[in-house]
Length: 270
Image (cartoon, rainbow, N blue to C red; front, side, top):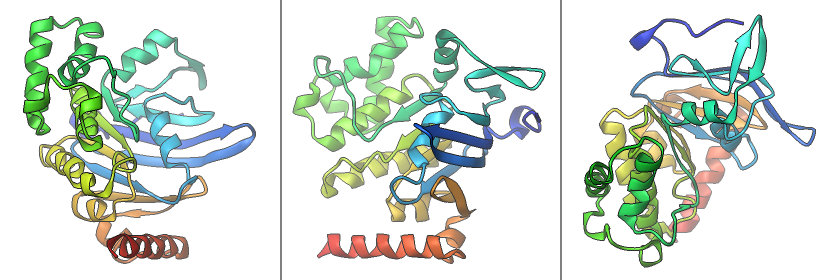
């Protein structure tokens, strides 16, 4: 099995080769290939059930893969390879790999009994062994970065959905990840709150954060993504720059999906 091409800055930060995954006998991923360069923003588009979220979860090994390989910064995720055979890593080794990957979910998953600052500072203290004072100072900086400097002492129940999601982004950033994964981060939000989360994500992209984003926000994908991947039924149907995939799609399935998305956007604006 080939290893990631190049080294250091020349090597893709993420490389997936022929990734397959099945649940209960149903193949959800049918041979996904993807490369993501450092500083690149990649948006995964496609209908529900197309495999986008599963693929995202496979990258940081929240789901194990059935076949293929995924490397992040040259590390084979979830496995060690000996003579062409994969051997599953232990939970501690996988957790260590996962430390460098931040993930933001549809649901915020904040600890309800901890303040916004405590939610952000907890992992650096518990996982990285950072002092409470240093973690607190870094947490305050990150809350300021996501526009919540004045809500550091608030508990999740006192925050709007958009504010909770911004705390979740700050929490992921607190581990100083080399890669950020976003799984439809605005899908659980009321429409008027979507913009505040997308603004934070735009700022991260502008600052050079490498991001893979599962989203139905066509405007964000069109404006921010360097590369767009359209998935359907567990395969990559079409990929390329937004101007090509969104602006001039070549496949019927891509065109049908985009028509449906535009129709839903039009109805939402009525």
